Amino acid sequence: MHNPIKTNIITHSIKRIFEVLPPGYKKRSIRMMLLLLMNSILEMVGLAAFLPLFTVILKEGVTESHHIISKAYQLGGFNSENQFILVLAGLIVFVITFKNIMGLFIIKSQAKFSLSLYQFFAIRLHKYYYQKGFSFFKNTNSNIIMRDVNHETQKFANQMVLPMFNFLTETFILVFILTSLVLYDWRAILLLSFTILPIFLLFYNWVKEKSLKLEKETFRITPKLGRSIFQSIFGYIDVVITNSLRFFQDSISHYLNKQIKLNIKRVVYQQAPTRVIETGMVVTIFIITAYGIFFLPNRAGLAALLGLFALAAYRILPSINRIMLALISIKGHQYTFDIVSQVNDLKTDADEDREEALSIPFQRDISLNKVSFRFPDGHDDVLKNIDVKIKKGEAIGFMGPSGSGKTTLMNLMLGFWKAKDGTFKVDDIVLDESNLKAWHKLVGYVQQEVYLLDATLAENVAFGMPADKIDHAHLEHVLKKTSLWDMVQELPDGVNTQVGERGTRLSGGQRQRIGIARAIYSGAEILFFDEATSALDTETEEDITESIRELTHSNLTIIVIAHRITTLKYCDRIFQVSNGEITRETGYKEIAGEMLGLGD
Ligand code: ADP
Ligand code: MG
Image (cartoon, rainbow, N blue to C red):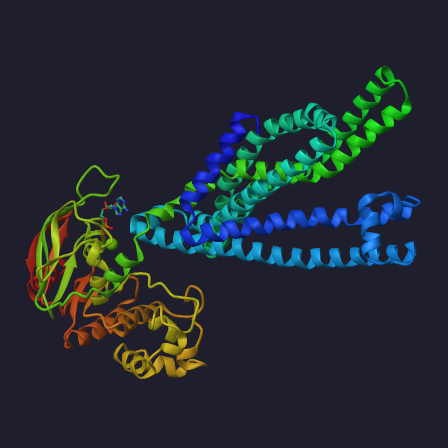
């Protein structure tokens, strides 16, 4: 309205909404706004529908004196006023029923619109965060990702876009009512502008910064509460053993308290406009009354003025109320723009399809060529001048003390990190972001901790595959190859046995084998193992090492990190890593002999 800040927030928000809305939604927005406008108009018509009935019932002889009513009376060919009254009452039933059916329909399309907007941004944002890559996921608490993807996108739709539609349609309605009021009696406008409007502006100015602060604080607290709950869930054993449940409960209740305080404030802010406006109304009535007593010649004049104000206020206040609520919401949720606008940086579908379709033929070798690497926040190179060529079908081992850079090297080969200098090549193709997906089609990765889905054993091996698409013949073959078949036969539901959220029903060795089976099921040609067996007892380790050794007879290329030399006994070549450098290349016999010699 007249306040420049308010104009700014509206135009600014409209601009930003238009920047982030995809083209299809822009058209839908306009349709949505027309529907909302229709809703408001229907509400007004619903109220107005009672007027003729009351007029005819209350005013004697109005069917003759009132020019519109008398015309309707004549045109309808009514025989008596009673008949006319009955028809008018029936008309109200029709109008209100129609209004309510339409109202439900409009509510439904509004919900559809906002939920699909939420879905659109939630899916994109999830994808965008994936695109941001490994280091983003490593450094960002999962509760933050959860909040942005699932909650902030919803808030953007429900607390920013919808209120904006409401604001625009209600402003339109308000202007319409004000114009008709001016035509009816300009003094009504004068009354409103000197009473309701200042109260409205005062209240809005008081509440807007508070609302912004409130929503920002909620934004900050939400993931912390989630984190303290999840930590106590995932850390169950440690919590119980260290007897620290109290500590975790304190932290949960600390954040719960904060959140509750914020929610109480929000409830009050949402209820306040109605109360403020009503209070404003009685203040106005007081002023009018005082004015009437001192300046108007008689009571009739005062009554007329009060009547005029009541009529104006009655029409205008619901509109003002909705405008106020919309403004508070729009102001409070400005920050959601920063969250959802990130999807503008998403790769295009065409780019993605191209990457998806690409494949790298792997014929000869993979090579690290004078590769060095440093973490974004690090001071020193964690990998220095690594120069290694691995031929197709070879089994290669990396050995070295903890912290020497073995995992980092493997993550670099897998494309999770980008080299600072040097290149990583598959045959002659330099690996970069554009062909990473193609590279991943070739590889399987078995980590020390195999990640298990809360799903069946079959779904865990055929990772990311819908249950009905699983190739059971292939699955059986893979399970036999990884020595899981006999174990599976003993499970209550065979391959369809649920393995639990964190695979707690499986032993370490079984989880490891599932990891290997997963890599083989996917058709990987190059298998990476990062200390995959180091957490296992010697016997299980030997067992699994034997399974891996059997794999070396197929055409697979195998790259293993191990800290026990015996795990590497099937390796063709072994590289020793120390302090980010490859210090030596040996064979198993040579190094095992030395180590046994040293050990004994
Ligand atoms: P290894 O697997 O040989 O035990 P890593 O490759 O895990 O060693 O770690 C090598 C070095 O890099 C260590 O000094 C470790 O502290 C550091 N490091 C590992 N991950 C990160 C990271 N995300 N950010 C910064 N430094 C890291
Ligand atoms: Mg490691």
